Amino acid sequence: MLNITIIEDEKPAARRLQRMLAKEGLQVGAMLHSVSEASQWFNHHQAPDLILADIQLSDGLSFDIFKAIPLHSAIIFTTAYDQYAIKAFKLNSIDYLLKPIKQADLHFAIQKFKQNKPKESNIHQLIKSLQPDQIYKKRFIVQYGAHLQSIPIEAVAYFYSQDKATWLVTHDGDEFICEPSLEALEPVLHPEDFFRANRQFIISRKAIKDITQYGNSRLKIMLSQNKPQTIIVARQRVKAFKVWLA
Image (cartoon, rainbow, N blue to C red):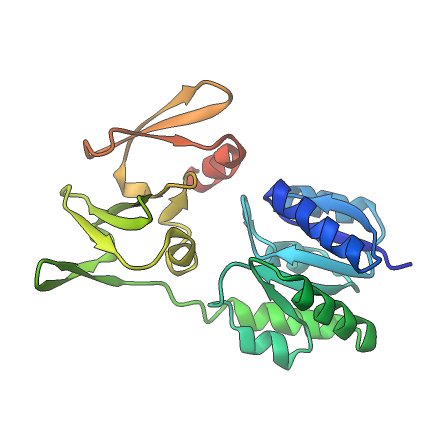
């Protein structure tokens, strides 16, 4: 029986993946939901045969786990983003599942693992290949009327999603429709400068005017603009936000 561990910060997504693995006749031994939790768990437990790991977790990248703790486990990465050097996954015989995950794709990945279990050295080559070449956006081309305008990243206060559209808001309070979704924006924004506060907002560090405690262990952020006046940091992201802010 294979020993399988899931690393996924969205608990409903982790449970869904667990059910999909059950359809493949596989049982999950552990479900971990953050870099810190996984790092602590691997320090006190035997490494599993197979890990299915989301790439972007609430408190960092899952690559950080595998860099800090040598593992002999095979890893199948799951991700909502195709910007993460997919070619490297294939070259190193490690598969990936692009969200939303399909049962057929999971089946193929499991069969690939069973037939050709990747070596530890391949995993570390993959991690090395994925990180140094990350390129972050420096400008966004936006349209207003019949005109196009180039907005430098330094001028962006935050992005927000509303009515199935993504909006870019500058420090001056100007708003423009921005083509990428928030999910597509996350991996191309420098993580030191921007933070995904909740499902609706990605905010710039420079736009934060004030931070206060809010009910149910959340935080309320006041931005330097008046639209919107406040943003609530989701409870599950508060810890990561404090680390980002430090």
